[in-house]
Image 1: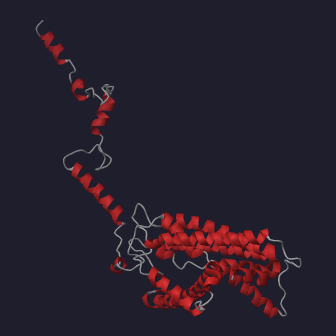
Image 2 (image 1 turned 180 degrees about the vertical axis):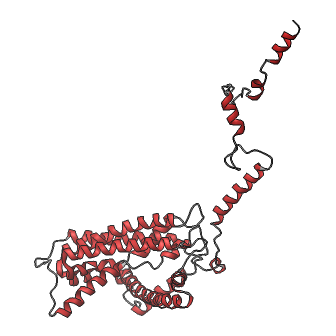
Length: 369
């Protein structure tokens, strides 16, 4: 009689209540108890990662915080990008707060100019079919090469190629890359500056004559003096600290380019066409002259896009981190810019050639330039 209660007390399983207690959730509800098999499997399970939320030991919590802080630091710094000390005071890279809007303004202003007005002249030598095909191939080739430059700007982790000389040195070596990039950069910059001074001075002279009229015809400025006025204005604008500070001027230039390109083809289409119009390509007296004419027409089409003279510099004005690289806003702005470039070039070429045909060399050039 005395041993039976002891056997009953020994058989009471008190461990399940202690090993699998009921857990009260934040909402006030009790979670269901685990079975004995699930309880044993949960007690023997090891954490999958030392930084997982389950690892909340006194050593694991500081380690997790250090790793998270280090990850954020690397993303903010830009995967340890080594910046050139000269970039801190050079005008192009002095400011790195650019965005996709600035990229669109700069690319549009740098990608279209007065050269677009000469594209119908190329159609006079190529005709409808080859003219449209050549212009389309040149446009997509220009867009493809711009995409390559955008990707090459940060092709090497921790390095940004902000200029063509740096990119050429990375491709061909220090000495050979310098000579490959220096000569084209110098003569293209000098040629572009000379052409802009000539066109800008003549345009300012014509604008002044139209606005002032006969009141200013007594002692007008000569053409060379207008060149000096335009050059002086360029020198004043060059005193601005960096490229981002002239984003407003790039926007004005982009709007102006779109405006006069649209005016040219709209006014050309709205006017009656000449009676002796013809859409046949201009004939040449010899085969060599015909080849030169075709090459000249292709050169006019290539000249209309003006190249990527500021692609790397524009992207250099943008901040870049591991999480937010600079090529994303740059390519977004470039796509918007080249959409408007296509809306300017193709209507000018097609509308101008439709209005004047092969007489475009005489009529369009004299009326626009």
